[in-house]
Amino acid sequence: MALKCGIVGLPNVGKSTLFNALSNNKAEAANFPFCTIEPNVGIVSVPDNRLQILEKLVNPQRVLPTTIEFVDIAGLVKGASKGEGLGNKFLGNIREVDAIIHVIRCFEDENVVHVAGGVDPVFDKEVIDTELQLKDLESVEKKILKVQKIAKTGDSEAKSHLKVLTEVKEALDNGKNVRSLGYSADEADAYADLLLLTAKPVIYVANVDEASVTTGNAFVEALRTDVASENSDVTIVSAAIEAQIAELEDLDERQMFLDEYGLSDSGLNRLIRASYTLLNLITYFTAGVQEVRAWTIEKGWKAPKAASVIHTDFEKGFIKAEVIKLENYQKFGSEQACKEAGKLAIEGKEYIVLDGDIMHFRFNV
Image (cartoon, rainbow, N blue to C red; front, side, top):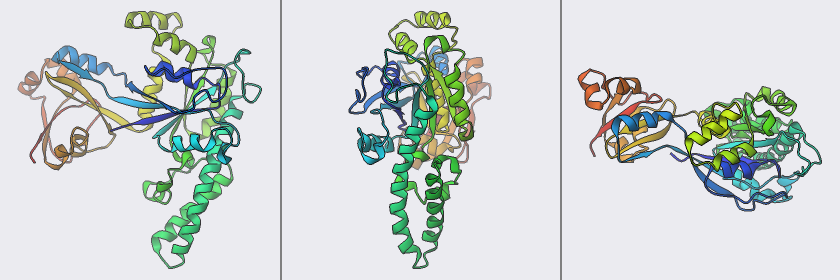
């Protein structure tokens, strides 16, 4: 399943530098607003050492990790909801993503201008929040007018939707993001077609200087305090460090570089994993001599639906799933050995796939 995250933020907060480090697509990075005009897209592998474990055990012809698509979207300015800067185009690009990576500047550098004149992460966050809320408010108000007419005829669904939409409008009027309202999936149907910007899940990326990459700083703490009520993740990243790491081809050299800064893993790997977790996704594997491959599904999916990400025929003609746990594959060394040891389970249509399952599907169409 395709997963897309949009990297957003004010101009000159480090979005394009971060994007360049994330992917092999090199977006132009420059010290002026709107350097990114069209959204740059990069496909990034999800780091997963379980693939390396399976590769050693199976010795396949190829290994295919699961991926996330990152979109570097043009910087936003105050007034974007009314078309300022690249406003409408920017907001349209955000509607297309599954989650938002909100990059916020948490470093001082007199050589990098700030559009607001000074570094203030809470102010920066509020600027973008306000513009997204205003755009959502515009969409919700238009739909309320349509639903009101239907509700007057006595339509029960319209009445239910109108109640939710009215509550959403009130929340937006009061500066709240829709994702903080906690609606159930059924309730969210009232506005699902609007692809509301503030309903999308978000990760805040605190872009810090090199000295603050392990400990954070006062800017990071201010941001954490401000978003505490949202139950959103704040990931500390130094885009400058990540850009240097991205230039190193050798994995040992990368690790040595990380060790110099006291880091066990790169900020980008943590960001990728956090993005995966944010959207409630897990990974299962298929393993054979032709390929070892990771597959992305939503947590809680049953076996037939999980099989559909390989091919829709797998779901339509599902018969059974053969499942091996990774720890057993490691212990016994092969699928055949697991089978002989009674560690290959035969599961039916009601089996809920777990993260890390190694699966083989039987189907008939």
